[in-house]
Image (cartoon, rainbow, N blue to C red; front, side):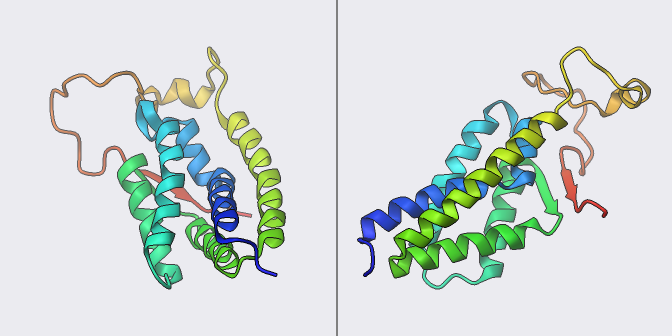
Length: 174
């Protein structure tokens, strides 16, 4: 028997939160301030935006979801994702939404639990990737101009180069 629509809609919201929370590229962007001072709030906002996107559009194709997510990450986090995770995240979201539409409450709950475990792992990894305060590596000492200044922006003396502010996330080599 299918679960009531409101129950599965709430589960879809939890699922979107779990998928985005377990998306390493997004979590790294948030942890490292790519979204600015309000990066965490933007990540939270993204959950609602993605949920609304699915409910407002009929029969979304995988590439439409990928393009939507890529555009949001580019606009809100100045981040271009090139590690292949856009397709994976889009597919997970589509699968959860399809289960929601079919009223598969137990399957949604199980998938969300798996994603929540993954989210904890990604959170720990993102926190470990963040350098400890007061510490510096040799690389940072050699190239201090590459350190991102996340303090409140003041007026720029000259316009930045066209590619300034972009962050490229690449696939890890195995």
